View 1 (tube, protein in one colour):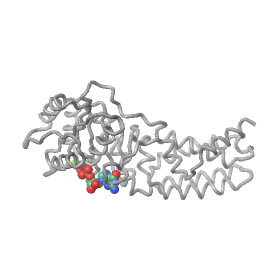
View 2 (cartoon, helix red, strand yellow):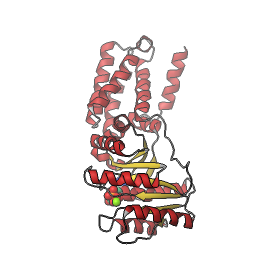
View 3 (spheres, helix red, strand yellow):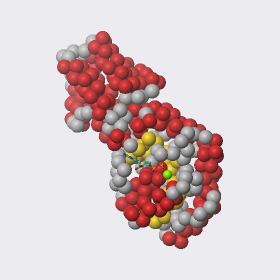
Length: 313
Ligand SMILES: Nc1nc2c(ncn2[C@@H]2O[C@H](COP(=O)(O)OP(=O)(O)O)[C@@H](O)[C@H]2O)c(=O)[nH]1
Ligand SMILES: [Mg+2]
């Protein structure tokens, strides 16, 4: 992920770092390169503009330009702003509710909801040591409920038995009693998507939200759709109270624009990345580590220390 962005940033930074001193023109040129890199990654114009506006006055500060290592200091400023843009820190999954803790996954059709439901169940069982029950509310697509059932069977995760023809609100009620009976700590509700946002889907997920009162509502969004993913999140967040984004297909996304824009555009933080089709291919999203990866510098920590030392001098 982020290969393109990383290559561009490396280009910009290598010329900035080579310069023994920096003037305003050189900083400007570097910032133009960064802006271009963001736009090519399919970050929205608004996000790119805001980013540059935040970096610029800091990078042009006298203490930076006059320092002995101005290039490194600019890298540090860009790194800090990138961490901010990505969401500062990861807020862990909220388990702070009376069990069985309800959580729901929403999103467009094909975004990866059902696969991600199983990945998340695996994560919560392995990492949080919780017993999870998975429930499909996708009554529209043939075989959607069976898809979740077989993921459960393959991976030894509890699912709610299917009753044909039952409506989502009744399935929700049945799930809560079944989870209580089975001693499940968490219920994951996989919902039905549409190819595009429509009123019916929105009113259905709103109803589910009212019924189950989820501790977490995750939007599952396809990283490959770039800016669109971020605006889809914004729209969903107008209807339901999204608590986090799970960005899927990050494994195939060389551009990474969705990851970079998501928080800014939708106001919702990314909590996980889907990085493959397998059940274990779910990664907790840490903005600082991702910023590190984007800037392509394995040793940003030592760079930060170096800058810190320079500032002490
Ligand atoms: N490469 C990759 N494929 C994924 C990822 N997440 C889901 N998929 C695939 O996307 C397709 C649609 O997933 P599905 O869970 O059925 O989507 P849903 O319609 O939202 O429930 C399946 O073929 C999944 O294997 C991911 O993180 N990486
Ligand atoms: Mg599905």
